[in-house]
Length: 42
Length: 385
Image (tube, rainbow over all chains, first blue to last red; front, top):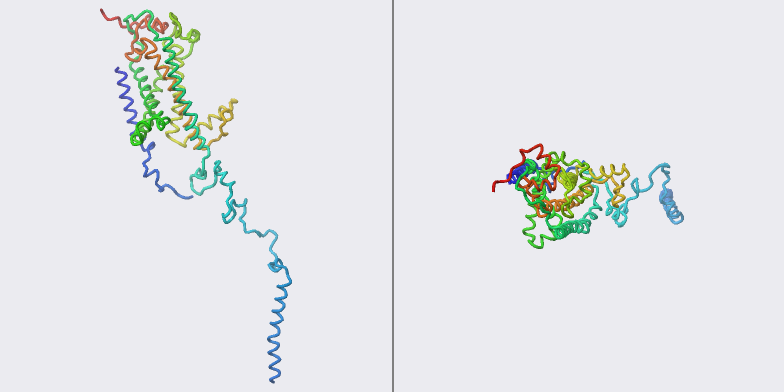
């Protein structure tokens, strides 16, 4: 039981850490995704 | 004097009149082509056509004529040129995307669903025929330490993350047809959004759990001769008093281990490529490697020849990720079955970390004898009555 509970804690820590660190990479706000600011011509 | 003036006036009007008459006559007699010709001949290499250089323009220079060919080419994935940095924007219609969509909405999902259902049915039939595998000599009450806290934590980390990924992943594939009609759009939308984010971030926990399990158990999962004997006797699953000797992991567990590791690695790599899209050319590279040893995967599967575009790579990743994930789900169904209702005493190994000595002697006799002989501190005596 101890190992099982420990695994839940570790799982949540990893998920929270990944979200904290990778959110800008993995989730693009619609204001950015649909913006034309980054569109330029050669 | 008056007479002289009259003759000069006549001559002044006569010459233009003659010139006018000649012009009229020329216009009536000469052909139209001759009229357009200039008296200055152009050089031999002069461009005489109004069309621009290069191949003829589709649809005519004024674009007034429709041309089915150009639209057919575009529909089939013809790439044009664009003046913006992202040259992939020259692809107006990625035709393989429609194939991918139809594949996902069509037979592929059906087959994946049938595979999972068939696994459950097979396990149910096996349970109905074989029943629960019991400890033949009964529980001794003596416990033997099988897995450490770290080993069990790694197992549950991998297991919990896999279940989370499985549920959220199956929602991508089957949610629209199975869950949406039950809970409605208002709930399905936000729920699917939450599950998508959960899937993305839980993936990292699964990868870490997988790596931990690999490091901790690789030593015990290297195939050896005892595995051949175990497999030859069907692992003792059929018939009673049939307990082929095994070390810490028997051949069946080794198959599960390597299955989980290889499928887990593959699902992780394809998932990584989906998390960070358009950065990897996994299928172009893999098919080229397999082609070097004579396995022409595109020809076997009827796929277009590599190299593939970035969007095609993503489509292949998506399909492959689903197939491998479902294969892993089927494998884990069998693992969960044998670790819970399928075998008496098996769950304790991952529950408390200790198993009954009789269970260990029946299913992992070589390992049990080794622990008894060399590591007696791992044995807990039966509690006093």
